[in-house]
Image (cartoon, rainbow over all chains, first blue to last red; front, top):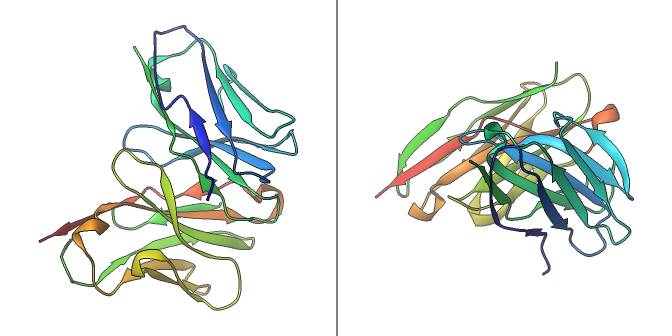
Amino acid sequence: AAGVIQSPRHLIKEKRETATLKCYPIPRHDTVYWYQQGPGQDPQFLISFYEKMQSDKGSIPDRFSAQQFSDYHSELNMSSLELGDSALYFCASSLSEPSAETQYFGPGTRLLVL
Amino acid sequence: AQSVTQLDSQVPVFEEAPVELRCNYSSSVSVYLFWYVQYPNQGLQLLLKYLSGSTLVKGINGFEAEFNKSQTSFHLRKPSVHISDTAEYFCAVTFGGTSYGKLTFGQGTILTVHP
């Protein structure tokens, strides 16, 4: 079965650079969630989209922005990167919200900021 | 306040022994409950979920969990663990009302199975 695809899987950036992470949800899933997992931490919710509209917002820095496109894929744009942004970024998708349909996670993008 | 607490940060156990990983939540609204497993350097895999109905839910790899509303708990159990169960386990909750959808995770429990 098709799973959530994230690209790139690994990314190394310098401080103050920008990064774009991409997420391709499971086919027919219309909701995308982004989570950030710092080293040794639990995943923290950043932002979610339902039918290309932002549906909820968590602890996402103002330096980050995201959107969901017409084909339901999503991109997380991160600017003015800081050392503390080094983390594993997960994307998850579900069929619809707010039905609490199960979220399926991608393998994550590991971002290292030097 | 809405929160999720995993009571044990690390649980060491011998192979073929039973194990219980504890999870408690605090909420004034309805909840949906999940357990995810994360193997080293990998993503999150759903083990099981409780949405409604029977309070005892069975998941993959022989795991099960019981929802106890009065104790606001959702403990994960396995009667006999294997070396391959060594991983980090996260309890996660979606809270009702306007926050439906996003998962709030517990701090994680590292299960280490020794031969």
